[in-house]
Image 1 (tube, rainbow, N blue to C red):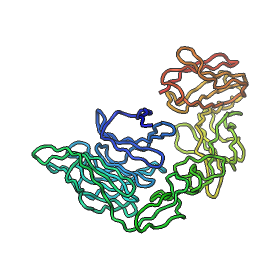
Image 2 (cartoon, rainbow, N blue to C red; image 1 turned 30 degrees about the vertical axis):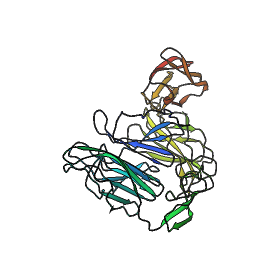
Image 3 (tube, rainbow, N blue to C red; image 1 turned 60 degrees about the horizontal axis):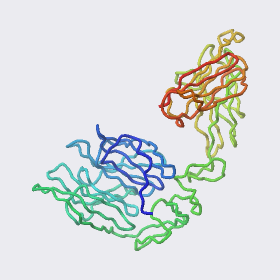
Image 4 (tube, rainbow, N blue to C red; image 1 turned 120 degrees about the vertical axis):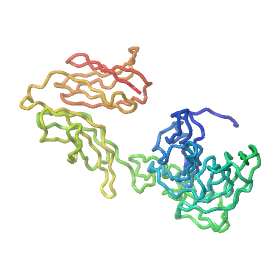
Length: 453
């Protein structure tokens, strides 16, 4: 087609001198110089969804003009600078499966910025750039072995000293060209272009029958000539089903399909229970109710006095639990999780928190007839909870309106029993601004403001 198509804007501050690389079907971008300072935030781009998702910040010092590349299922970032003479030679590995950075061996050359890097097979290469010596442009070239976490100096770049060049790899070759140097008498700009051929001591290749970028470790061999046959790859040997491109370590687990979609050794996942209500509230007990989860063996419930640190945990074989021995007139925090398998352990995350209040001591029959509407967190930028407290059964209607009075969503419109009821809304679906949540029950009309950030 030979066309350019604009995609979703990068979601954080505009910048330059950032670093980018790809792992599997995702792209990654981070660090760089914003209008105010060097940065360290790090983001993942999903082309299938055309969305940016913030990941764990780069674990080194904020910087610009660094080098990044990927080797297999990991990303690498290092060197760069903040302000003169703060040049860096530290080197870091990013694991997208864990969303974690790991410190690796420092770059083997001098601290520098505006260097260049790429990967070939299972090794990374980094060289050229500028260090603090005058005029500082470099031509040394280094190989990084992630298996050994070592740097080995290789033949200097054939085009001579330079910085701010461009480098990439194609198959078994690396390419480097363009750039700038200063020999003390003036600046020089380059347009020459060079090919790098690494040493070959044999190369393990893995079959990738489904062409998803992840190979089968069982179906592998050592290519003595370091030529990768068609249908094979040199990294990412962790595919657990090489006949299915929808199964590999970058795929999100699909619950209920009896397939280990993400190749983590666990078949299927465990859904998070949705708390539906808190009923039978007395001065010392209440009953927690939630939606049942398919395939759950049982559930764990944890509770504590709100704004304290210590959780108490109980279990329930069904989707309801009575919690006793509580303190009167006290706000509690509650959460529930599903247990879907014991060996290996497969459990869900904890549900959103519910915050019921026990009745006053010896006044369980004289609860206030007031009906309460609560929203939290507020302001919100993601999932928010609509918390209804009913002292008696009543038909209830809860709706969300924008500032112009236009109805945006019906949260609930049905008869509810007395007690606490919880409904989740995704505010990320709404534009930023002010909204009004309206509740109508037999106790009357009530409004609360909701701010979406």
